[in-house]
Image 1 (cartoon, rainbow, N blue to C red):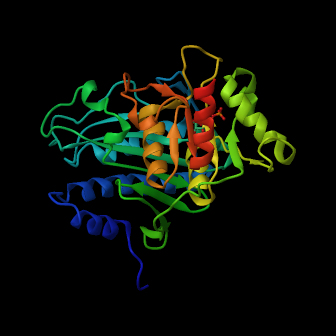
Image 2: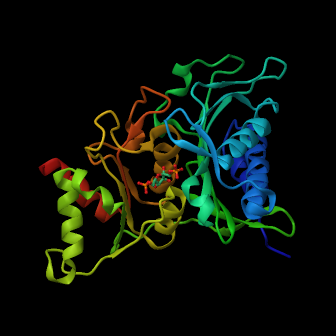
Length: 334
Ligand code: AFP
């Protein structure tokens, strides 16, 4: 069919505009695409091939792993470790940084990923996804933890793949956000959602309200005002969604606006928020900002945080600018 731009064509054309950029980045992205197509196939096959259910093990975060958490993690590592495009990797499912085996050449990028975000949804056949973040690395070195602990604003590229009714890849290289749908017949991601932008205004919020008693005052105030609807200070009714899968929430916000909160809560003082900075907050923060939205902890811009740990957790408030600005203002006042 004419005028169908594939993801590879799109990236090569974008690279031509950037001085001094080699083709390595396109090749790296193709490696990720290959892994995500495999994951898409497995997610789609589900119980037919026995990949659902618990693995009865725990990851570094102390969370019970699904079989698919382990399978998708292996798929990502095995697709990326031999190609010579990466200097190292880090995964939400793995304690330490993942080294490139000695027999393979090393490249100039680092890849960080959550191989199966929202995996608690996999057994109930709801949307899950793969989130990834690409950082630069000094060429030819064996990277240390310090090489990975870069601020989100230094990401070269961030994206996620959504395994929903369609498989989609949402991508930014710092020049806006574009969405590609996997054409299963030809096995290619096709540009279907160019220049995605988030409407400034919204009347839809997403938060796990079962944690309400643990929230801080600014979040209590914001949600309370939304719930009062037309009769309250906001003077309009709000709708609520909660998918428990960050990729699905972010895709919805990219499509029709909205605000998502996984705020600081008092459940466990050792965990300042639930979401992981390096595998979730930074990549989606880059995408949200590139689409005209805002991503904050409530007190600071996510992309400005200097990471101190590979598996660091942060509060996340993201989405339509006017709403996130309002919540940040409540934090400043509180
Ligand atoms: P899982 O990958 O363990 O399912 O966690 C998903 C997630 O990190 C994020 O995608 C959701 O927004 C959030 O957790 C859901 O959290 P609740 O369990 O509190 O609903």
